[in-house]
Image 1 (cartoon, helix red, strand yellow):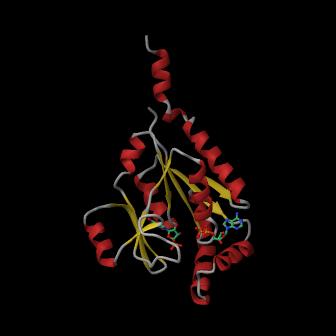
Image 2 (tube, protein in one colour):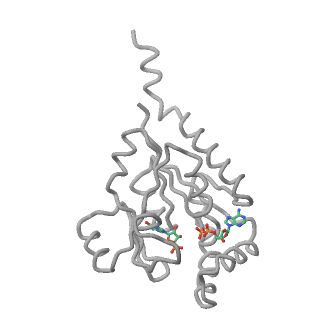
Image 3 (cartoon, rainbow, N blue to C red):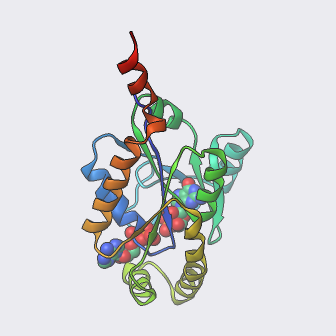
Length: 201
Ligand code: ADP
Ligand code: 5GP
């Protein structure tokens, strides 16, 4: 059986990572979403164990001490981390695992997991990025300015990724990510067993 893909989707805040990943998950039955732990407060409608595991700073530090994270980072004053539990198990069962994480976290995972598939989502323009951050309606003017400034300086980091997808429409971004998944599954280094099986006497 082919091992699952470790898909890492990141990009600047407000680009639409959450929106695109949600749609991708709804359309892909073999994709498993890795639920992160965070110390930030839940937003309206968010539930513990669905969007995130909402934990205290003390609990988060305990998880760090117990080596329970594949990576973790401080983002806009809160901690976020990817629990390692289950990821390897799912990949070994042929399920693809999706991490939707910030850029620092993605760069850390790149060092540990060179076999991962790293996708950077770009907004169609900075103006549209600003509209999307405002449109989300969850930012105060102060956090908006901080997020927008951080977002524009984060964009250049995207050159370190393997793939770039412009989130112009959700449909087209999702189609492009599906095409990346299909191409990755066809890579020779993920399919060496096909040659061995075919040529076995
Ligand atoms: P992120 O997870 O990257 O911070 P979100 O998924 O929360 O971003 O999206 C930010 C805002 O932009 C949301 O209001 C969302 O509805 C909107 N949005 C996301 N993708 C698109 C798109 N392709 N076209 C228009 N609006 C979008
Ligand atoms: P939000 O607070 O808007 O849900 O997320 C803020 C940022 O944290 C987003 O860029 C999101 O992708 C990122 N994030 C979510 N989970 C993780 C995680 O486990 N690790 C890291 N490094 N970043 C994360």
